[in-house]
Length: 116
Image 1: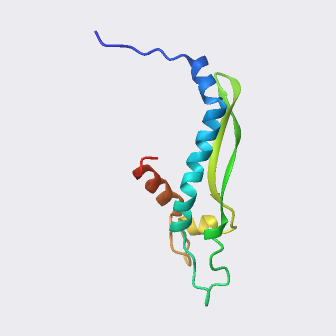
Image 2: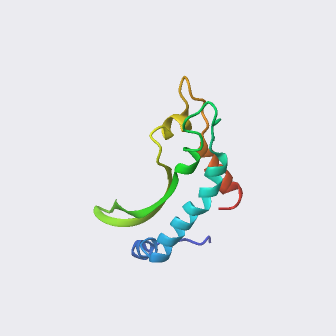
Image 3: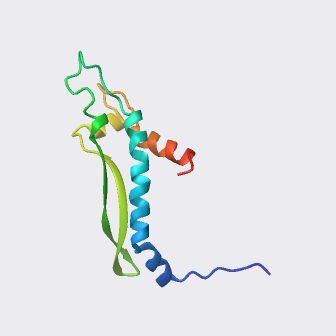
């Protein structure tokens, strides 16, 4: 007969709300920061008046988010790596004038391939 697993939802909720989990998700985002900066386009200073701005605008944000679980709100920690420039979406997905760089996707791929 095979083994069975019965998860304790109360226990899982306790684990997900522990301070060490909040630190772990922030560390994961901070670990990806240098990867995102290295993959970011810099621009040519002679033709681009914002050269280096995109590369220098990556920040790690941490906090808690309310998630509904079994009808009750529960706080979950998060750590995010985001770019604060107004044109970050255009750089990530591309437009008619801006090529698609996909920095966030490539950063995630690089972090996962490194075992993170």
